[in-house]
Image 1 (cartoon, rainbow, N blue to C red):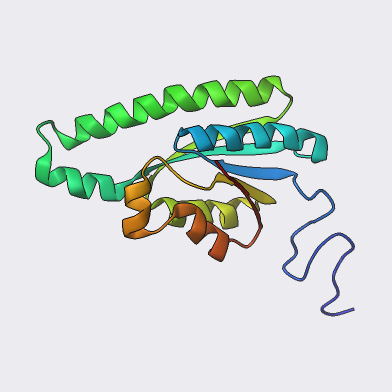
Image 2: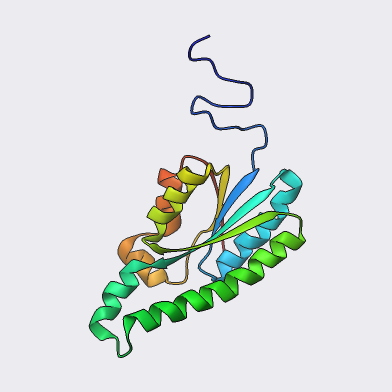
Length: 162
């Protein structure tokens, strides 16, 4: 039958038989992001199998730093990547120990845009995100990453509050 929908899928073809099978966990390593990490681990009991841990290095940071940096921007970028890899590795190990398939992505760009692109590209079931990031002032000036993700995501978004 043309245009029919298979059992367990919606009209876009997304499978909803395991509501939380593939989780996207964006983190900025803030306290609230770590609370969201605890929620991710609890989703194992709800059928979660795979977690993509995502850290986005905000490209707007480099634009601002270009005016004020006393060190080479490439050196700053290397330092940020190294620190992110160290922090993300701990999270990845913890998830694997809990029985998840865990992968890590460290990307550069505008956080909300990168999160939404990966959601689409990876066929994510749910995004688990903290309600506020590391910079409340930045959120006032340019808008909350979590708010943008909530408004534009195709999958379910679980927002963890403070």
